[in-house]
Image (cartoon, rainbow, N blue to C red; front, side):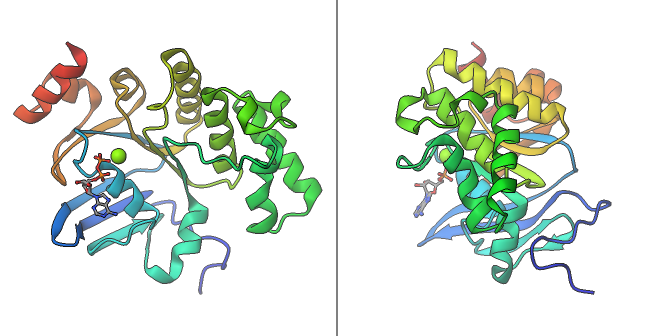
Length: 254
Ligand code: ADP
Ligand code: MG
């Protein structure tokens, strides 16, 4: 039987994400050079590594914002191909460093937009769902405001609510706090921590080593498009096998 068109069939025994031998070449430059890993459902994976190591490209491959040059991506037990991009996007939500809210729409309209246009929900249902997820990120009161009137931390929380409102199976975060002042960073990290506690499967590219250490089940260090280190945070942060990972961490941890 084929899966319903609106979503991937969810095989609950399969890993949430399976990446097999993924490469990505831009022009002649290999950016991902054979990435393979499985991520179990409900786990939080943090990806760390220097600028240019391929972290964003890997995340973008996971929801097909980039098409891998070779290799396989499986989501919830189903291999992804270009014909399924819309379905993947429905299952895999993504939050970016730049919040990308629509400036001409209120907070509530930002969250409702894809529910109306993509999910084709009736407006009352879209509004109720938007309110539910805005409440989850502590932004319910801001529904009638415009993004320009909000702090960066508030805007990012709205962007998270917008992604959550699509009710994805997996959430990807690409340096979601990197453009925020420290006091605004913590309010966004608190929301992400809450999602992790609720059991959301998450892949988090971050420079917040405290978050990576305390919240994730697993930490991966990328170097020049290769996974150099992959393990439990306690192990990676205290006894990295890779010398490069050790050097990278020493810059952050002092
Ligand atoms: P990171 O997120 O770890 O900083 P990226 O995945 O953004 O790394 O980039 C890895 C490498 O790929 C960099 O050298 C970057 O310049 C290059 N790159 C990323 N996107 C593109 C693109 N669309 N075209 C060409 N090169 C790209
Ligand atoms: Mg990046």
